Length: 393
Ligand code: FEO
Image 1 (cartoon, rainbow, N blue to C red):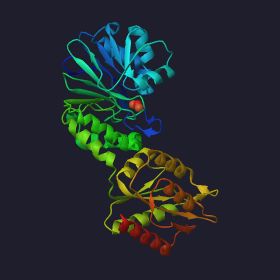
Image 2 (tube, protein in one colour):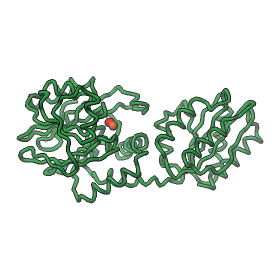
Image 3 (cartoon, rainbow, N blue to C red):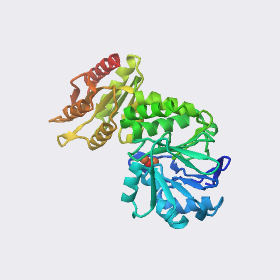
Image 4 (spheres, rainbow, N blue to C red):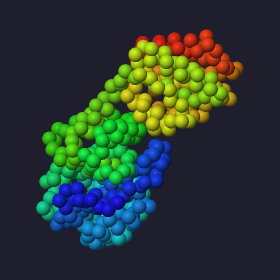
């Protein structure tokens, strides 16, 4: 991707990773972008870098505008390697003595990724940095997404460089929110929030309030992944405020795996029962749906119904994977129930219930077990189980 001038003297010099399909366990079916920004002022400033393997493309993009050696300042909003991986090569090219501005936690974390010795300048919230004609203000935003994360605000242009905040793992021909349909960009923003930031919701809610209390206007919000928000930056801010509250919709998801289609038949009968009560519900087979897509569905659902066959006295492995993943993301305000087909010992339902309780879900039924293949009568029991869940949503 060629650099794009997003405002006068401000360029996106980042790169598109068209082929990444697994981003530490998150499905990136369309790829993603590592956005980085160059501000041309009396002091030329680079905000963030890119994943290590793309550092050459980043430097090429910068070279189309200026000689990289003329960069005066580097801002590192976040030490995770999709944004800092290119730092070593950039510093080697521009001069290892150039100042790097980062949060206090960034100052602790970056040297643990790279050979120490760079010219770090830790900054705090409200601290400013003059670029000559324009000024940057720093805002520490711990846990959006790591303890070192911060936002950088370009005062005169009212542009917020928000690092992981408000990002989406989306790669396409579009760069701005006015070039893509709302449903697509909001889906990817929601998926990103549900799979990366959800566990920090309460903290993010407070941080966003602090940012809003500063009374700043935002003409543009520039995340480090995906589409830039310029048509209506408030829209994504408002969405984050809403998402942080985790108020579920009247909706159920039935997440399951199956060995010989018995748990699958149960899942579909349960979905039909839930739907009978006027609650939208979907069966999500864990070997057809990626865990990060399932989590996006779980995010705004009230009822999470989990089904597993018993395999060697345990949960089916895909369920163990998913329950571990969901537990780490700490979804709130859910009701839950378990089901599954079994042959002889049938521990899976008990094990699922233990996990749901550990997640503080309200478990609304002891769970439903059917031995071997559900017949018509057993499927009627599943249907009624679904109706009970539907009534509770
Ligand atoms: Fe895009 Fe937390 O890194």
